[in-house]
Length: 407
Image (cartoon, rainbow, N blue to C red; front, side, top):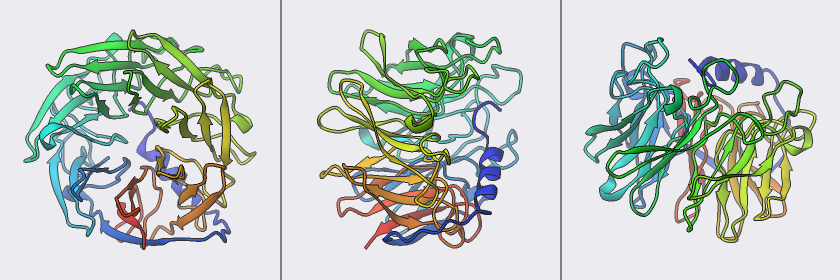
């Protein structure tokens, strides 16, 4: 299966847990509000939660549920309250309805409908039988409609990053593969697409795999003028001689023209961004890279201003976290909040806060059991300033958790 696999993260977590880190930074109180049970309940929540504004959250699990194509299940969409009351909204069956929402959060649209992507299922584009992925809609009662089935090739395949909606209800997203055969493997370097409210899909941009970037598992953000912003995990600068590149931050205009705002150079500059950036009121972008930074290669938090100048706000060293995978959250004072999948006291990941000047505080360091491990998803903040998120592993059943950080 193309992309970053479950086995990769299992091996990564196992190796990380062998190297506990000393960490004396201040912590906030963490509460596990739900332990995933596996099977029909879902397991391995890799994506961020999203709030409906009425006190409920929605999320996805990478596995669980039940289907024939994937032994560990094709994934679920769930709803959960701040008190931990959880219900299943939908269980993917792995056929035409899609499979494996991967690291893709859902988006809430008009009428409480949920929109999202699965990286597998539907059209068998490569002969594996697993499919190239879908864009789907779920009603509040859990009725699914597949809005689009990716066909591979120039159409794109494996939409790993979810979708966002504009004011008119059009959906925008990315595919990790498909598009142009940029490296001779036939997989392609990925695309950016638009899906109209009537379900008509248009490819806005096809990555060429060179200086313009290649392959993205991240979603997009949109500004008031309709410009789209995102990252590619590869392409850009050939930072290590492999020819793959260390990734980019890009802007896509409403006319489909791409501008690379920053190409990561590896080392202290950072490498391989896996998550969409966030934007402040001034138009500055903030995000994370999975690698680069210090010699330990634990990743960074970066700022890219409106002129495309990058500033490294923080480089992780393992003690304070490492390998951040998802997007940041910014509060009204400019503080940034996020998760790092590894590092901390036990090597199982952290929740952190970063001031606008780059001072980091570890709010929580995960210990696997009972509080979870490998927080791949980002955070969502409620009106009281409490943070909610998920872990992919750990907890009472080692199937992952939903947690709250706050008072």
